[in-house]
Amino acid sequence: MMRGVNRQDIFECDKDYLKFLDLLHRAAFPRDEQNHALPPNIVIFCYCLMPNHVHLLVRETPALGISDAIKSISVAYAYYFNQKYEHIGHLFQDRFRSEVVNDIAYFITLFRYIHQNPVAAKISESVDDYRWSSWAEFNTNLPKADVHVCAVSSVLQRIPYKELASYVYEPMPKAQRILDFDNDTCVRVTDDIVREFVRSEFDMHITDIQHIEKNRRNDMLQKILEFGASIRQLSRMTGVSRKLVEKAREPKEPKGTVLFGPKLKNGAK
Image (cartoon, rainbow, N blue to C red; front, side, top):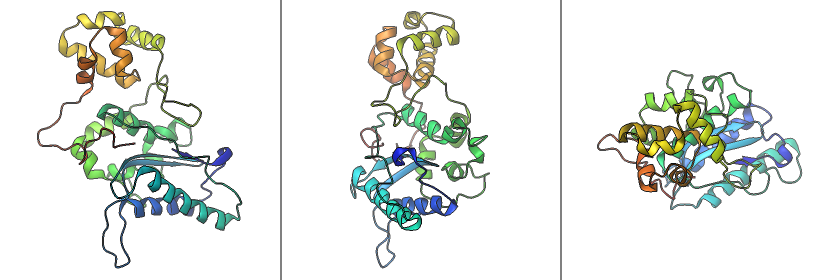
């Protein structure tokens, strides 16, 4: 996540958005002076450019660490912006903020959150209407994306489009919170909110879940995790072992699929 200093806008017109997308494209698909393809500096799974901030879901690569990759993009864009608008001083607020994505379930949560950001901010009526996110790269029924920057095939090999779309179009729970610039850490939901969710969603106390038949129990655990509870938190509150909670969170994988090339764990951010 990158945000304008003092919350100032970092995009003033379409050309500014397109410039930033061009920088993302150059990072994801770099070429040498002879126009030969080079290893990517960063693998981009999705993005959303908002008027005063940017969300990226990415995987760092051996070619360039995450800090250097994002710094290269931000420095180049700040130079462009400052030259164009005769702006003096920093454009972005401090260093970008990031967190490691340790599992596919949270990857999907972030994928939804990033694409739903314009709707949540009330600057777009639907995910489909917002031009400056990566959703047009995935939904081929929409007008073609201005610039291709995402590893679309890698995502769709892991998550079929219909399943992905069902997540993206379903509004996220209002109680769920994602790491943002106004929080020092990723704060999801409190125990009381989790208990209330279980009562309203399943009409039972959270400690009763451990006694439910396995398949139904796993479905319930998965829904609570998608709501925003952490694995450690849910294991503590239900009495179900952490290993079983983790297993419930794992989606069923079609045979022969690959999790975005290298393991997602400790790689995607």
